[in-house]
Image (cartoon, rainbow, N blue to C red):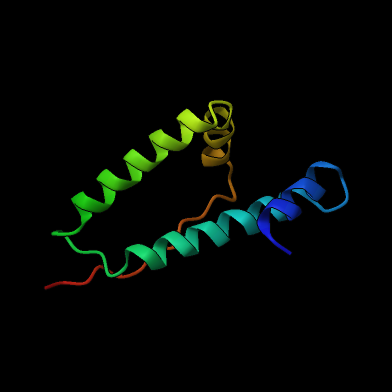
Length: 88
């Protein structure tokens, strides 16, 4: 089941909200992590810049999402996948 469907069912009370939110957060975290690895001191500024630009554009498209995202960032179950930095 895709993330949109899971989230809709969680909001409707069909699926457990906390579990679904954690699963969706982990799914996107893993995808972003895989896309930016290997991360190094040389590539980090580019990654930070593009993530900020992308976040700003998403917020413009979906202004109400910013507040919800801030709540998710503060949630205790929020996890970011960490991988060892690669050295050149």
